[in-house]
Structures are given as structure tokens and as C-alpha cells.
Length: 90
Image (cartoon, rainbow, N blue to C red; front, side, top):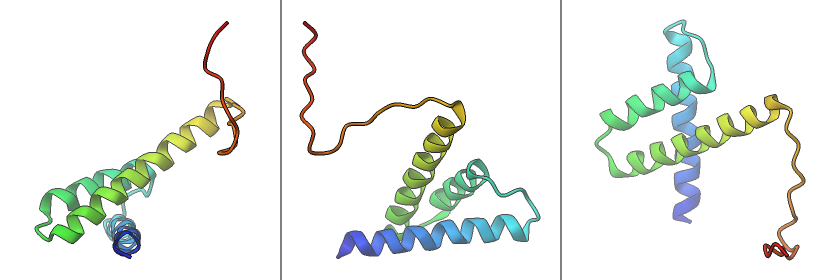
């Protein structure tokens, strides 16, 4: 239950970062949101919000990496979770 609470709070914090960018009439991009989240993190004193901000930063970084991968044109077949993988090179 606590994880869901942090997930929801992290989504709210991301929304606040976006709104802050819009109020400042700044560009809204994943990188701009990441910078805003990091500034929120350093200014925050509430432990729950700190944890949620860290989760938000982690989620935004994942999205940045996914978008970079998609834009690069690289296609890799990822195994399904239940596939067995043999890592031995013979």
C-alpha cells in the first residue's frame, strides 16, 4: 500500500513540475522536468515527498532512456519474463 502512495505522489510531483514549467513559460521536455524535479528534491523537507520526488526522478530518467532508445532506431528482441536464457557462450 505504501508503494502505491509513493507512486501516486510521484505522479503529482511530476505534474507540479510540468505546471511550474508552464507558469514560467519555459519549454516542457523530459530534461526540463528532470531539472525541476531535482530542484524540488533539494528544497523538500518532508520525507514522504523526498521519497516520491526520488521515485519521480527515477521514472523520468527511465522515460528519457526509453525515448533515446526509440529515437536511435535500435531494435532488440527482449526475452519474455518466463523465457529461459542461456548466457553460456560455447
